Length: 251
Image 1 (cartoon, rainbow, N blue to C red):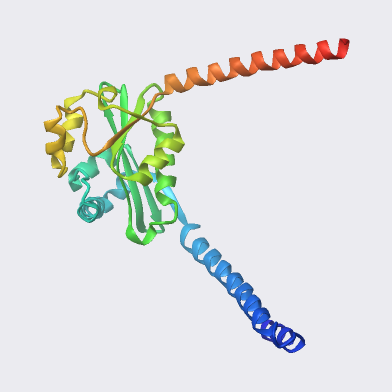
Image 2 (image 1 turned 135 degrees about the horizontal axis):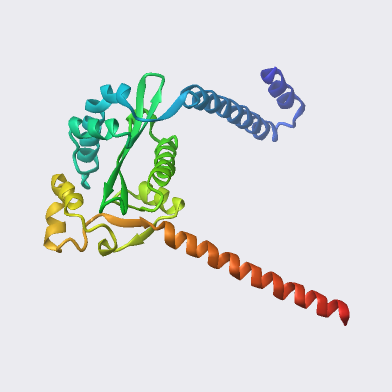
């Protein structure tokens, strides 16, 4: 039907307009076909993707996750702390991790670390399998683990250090703000985890004050105070508007 339509347009058009009409029809048909293919692709590959609070049944993916984190660090070259399969298993067993699966196929992972007697929480090891990248899965996992950690540790400050711009963007959208390292946890165990990063010497040379990573922090208390302030401002503004309206009406 599309070919006949195109042929009719070309026959009924003037010779000078025929190439233009042909291009327009071809472009529109190509766009429709592309949108259809993208729709089918995303629905078939992402619709069945599920996020779970990782449990013992997911321990089988620990080695794959560990190797993927290591290979990603090598490719990026900007430094990602390595995590052993045993370390990944410990996070899964403590139900401090989110895993994304496409059926039985591993798609993505992220885990929670707790520092300073539950005063600080960090999301680490965010990784997405290569074949699932570029589809918003990292943001989906990050959002899921953010909500989960806020539920599990409601009073904890949530922080992270990263060199990845996509992760920074996701963090910012979740309410994180860039901060200096002095505002993060001072728990030595956390900074010890940076020893496997290729840029650890930068951190030690600056006495843990800065590195190639950017520190980001979500403070639930500050967020609550900001919302209270916003509500107070809006309430006062509404009263002023009402007063102006009444005065205008009387006049």
